Amino acid sequence: MKTDVQIAKEAKMVPIIDVAEKIGLTEDDLELYGKYKAKVSLEVLDRLKDKPDGKLVLVTAINPTPAGEGKTTTNIGLSMGLNKIGKTAISALREPSLGPCFGVKGGAAGGGYAQVVPMEDINLHFTGDLHAITTAHNLLAALLDNHIQQGNVLNIDPRRIVWKRVLDMNDRALRKIVIGLGGKTNGVPREDGFDITVASEIMAILCLSNDLEDLKERIGNIIVAYTYANEPVRAKDLKATGALALLLKDAIKPNIVQTLENTPAFIHGGPFANIAHGCNSILATKMSLKLAEYTITEAGFGADLGAEKFFDIKCRFADLKPDAAVIVATVRALKNHGGVPKQDLNEENIQALEKGFGNLEKHIENVHKYGVPVIVAINEFPTDTERELKYVFDRCKELGAEVVLSQVWAKGGEGGIELAKKVVEVCENKPSEFKYLYDENDSIKRKIETIAKEIYGADGVDFTKSCEKQIKDIEKLGLDKMPICMAKTQYSLSDDPTLLARPEGFRITVREIKISAGAKFLVALTGDIMTMPGLPKVPAANNMDILENGEIVRLF
Image 1 (tube, one colour):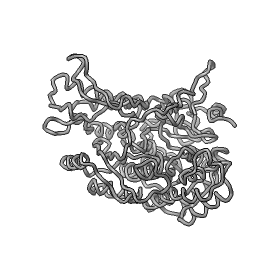
Image 2: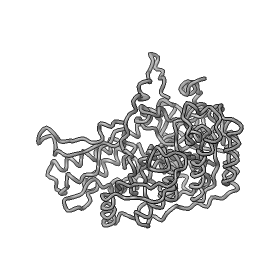
Image 3: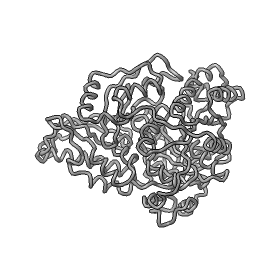
Image 4: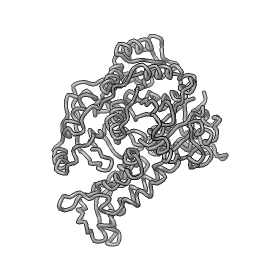
């Protein structure tokens, strides 16, 4: 069996100019990064502003397991399947982070015969967007520390600096550090730390901005610290707005590449859904909606995280109205949720499947809460039995969800035709009645409790004493009327990663609330979730190599 890397290497890519031409883009609309990738000018949006939008389809999933689900693979395969049946479709994805790439996950460009290419470029440095975000973020940190060093005119309290530094790598040793040591010329000593770049508020701002001016306004509103008088200090107070926007002038433009079957794909922005809002950029999505009949986008991890944030944050800010949602699941993953260890997943087990199905059931219910029609895509594995597949199909139909067997991993676009037909059928015959889960003007506690009870199935929420104080401080600042971005483990509907399937009788603990005034949301940190991941005992990086002829091996 060929590896994903081998399949990608054998792909017959066409010049990105030709791919772009299929959707009405000219060479003048592109800024080329070599032969097979390009950035798209934001002028395209102005030119097409009066053109009606195409259909918007979200691809989400059950809670992830070691067995694998194939959400990105399904997204790509669906876009290729739609093109196979005569529809113009664009896959709108996020950019991979180097942290997971070299950590646990490996590459993040799809799999099998449903991939985006050039795979190596996309997974590594791509067009430099994440590096630009990293640099912009750290410039703000440098300007902040320099301001304190040079006299501290703004009266910043060094004990109340909330702007950490970032790095696009999993590096747990940098979570908590001390800077400014070594004498007066090296700055003012203080505690600091690093988050991973994809958790940066600047990443969120890039993904949630509607244009360059919106980007600048949001950057200026970033709260970096507080004064001794407890007043917030923003990026604009440090006169940082222009310089940061300058560093992001290219990063804000969507990137276009292609699938293995030369279907256009926009890959832009890369926030994680467990610690950030988990969606690709508004600009890429809006551009895709103008250029294609169908935009197939994604939101990270399960529907409890990615889909909730897509609906309640991204759609709210961009005024998007999704037409349908595809929930990806596998029989193997459902059995894993039902208690079967990874090594035994090849064996038929209806009892475990029944128990694990509760996870899929909850995600179907969750998407229905938003008034969006649901299609379940069962990502096929050779070990799936007829009895197992029949059980899943029957249960999905009982819940009012369409269900289709997806074979895109093995067959590419051809294996996604049935899913594509079902998506078109649903979009044309089942009008979406999209609505938000909560009113952003509700209290902070009520918004969090609504998410926890309605989406996670929790009995309630416990707030730590320090969190209670943070809520009062946020209310005093008048910043409480913003959406909530929950930071929670991706592995469970609860905040305990060991509680699989559909747990009951649990509560959610919120230990901290961070203000992202530029992104215009509040981040609620639950359980033990970390904003700087660590590497596993055996990192994926240990197996990667580049051969003498330049061939990259074991990136997946």
